[in-house]
Image 1 (cartoon, rainbow, N blue to C red):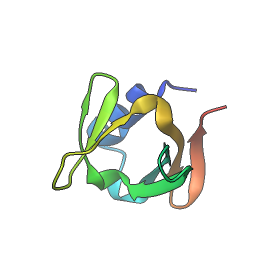
Image 2 (image 1 turned 60 degrees about the horizontal axis):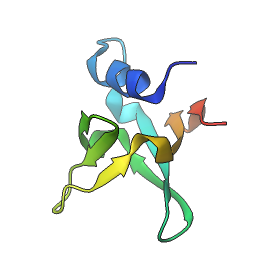
Image 3 (image 1 turned 90 degrees about the horizontal axis):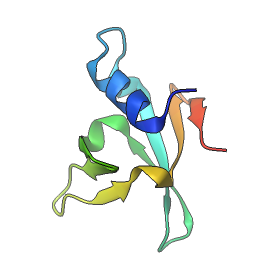
Amino acid sequence: MLPIHQLLNKIKWDKRENPEEYSILYLDRILNKLIQIPYTSIKKIEGSFMVLENVDETNIPLHRIKKVMKNNVVVWERR
């Protein structure tokens, strides 16, 4: 299984992939639950963080990503 940063970059740069088919589930420590976002809401990967495209440019550590889904099927999961 690919490390998460490699998978996120593959989804973005591989012409065979469609980023709109993917969603990311990450652990929100404040709410203590998994939050699902579309892959297209990621503005950039910067070091060990994904920066979300919103007003505050939220930074989510990559280690909090628990699952990646393609068309509602889990394709990557942190164990």
